[in-house]
Length: 516
Ligand code: 6PG
Image (tube, rainbow, N blue to C red):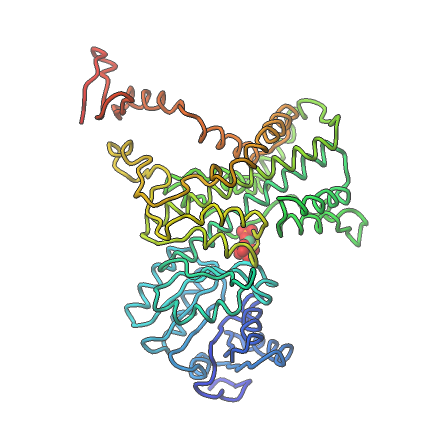
């Protein structure tokens, strides 16, 4: 018998249970309790449960339990158990453990940053046991978890009917509307959370590049640049990440008296969601170049032997001093805005393609609406994105981008084919965004050109510009690539002037033949 820290809890009395009392789990439990839900709380080691009840017990009704069996027994039936643990094997272990005590009809909600394929697998496994499963992406960090996160649940309608109201009650709100909506089935919630994080990577990299350009070009101290970001937060760039950029840049290290940003080691870490986004985009054949460059920029920052060797290479190409600082700052601001729209556009393309691949019905307008508050990428311009997608039919069945998994001969036909309900095939060209993007593109061009000639790395800004120029090009040099592929590998090509699939007998008589 294990020693019990708590009395055996009241049976069947808690509205919801939370297992995993780390920072996110305990904040979520407090949020639930503050909203009037009686919350059963559990952790594999009781110390964290004890600390929560000791420090925050007065905030609502908590029913603590040391043992999983007691935790489950304290829940009203049908039971709702939220799992909030580090994503990966631990999630499987905790779900297996809790499921031992659950009964058909009970529901498990995984609020961690799970990989969506794991969520699909877990949903199937629990369904076979008669249990319901919801994979809910939760964004907003520790403060968001407590004060109102953005929540992206993926589950069946039956499961959402049960847990939706509970989750909506603790989410952030915009104009009284909760930042929580039923995304679609199984892994869809964790999928859109993954892409949210990919966009978060792009957003942060773009901000970092803007900072670097101004720091080096204007010779301004971080504290002065904090003021620039503060001012930008009053413009179309208004967002949580711009707001906290100002705070980070303004921070002085107590020990050295130097700007904290100058004391922090310049190697960016990552837990994996950005990498997953890019890996999945590659599989889907969706160009998420802003997110990819942001992820690789983190990898480059941590490539220490390479950076040491690279530091021996020739210095900056030219002196980087800016003649008109105000005009330059405004150019960088506009460049950041245009590149940010590109990153979101690419991220929504990926979600659209995944909806087709996994047969999810995703309302992109509703998704943009729940990202307006609570989450890390919350930003004023999500109003524009939700407005852009407002005319979307709720069913997303159209193909966004080439499906590289399609059989080769069918690829040309598959490209651009639509199931017919997308109102906005390209977010950055949406009627309500197009003008503001086009207005900012000349500034993005000037900034990227300036950075290139000065030898400053702006991978996300330049990839965004290249994407913009690629997607707006009527004709791309991909035709030459098709010719080359046909030359060395008989991979065939389509012609602009007639149907069919063709091959040229390059090494023989040079004549063209119709293959299909
Ligand atoms: C959020 C954050 C959150 C977390 C990321 C950071 O939406 O609340 O995205 O999920 O901070 O895991 O990821 P990296 O460690 O990979 O930057």
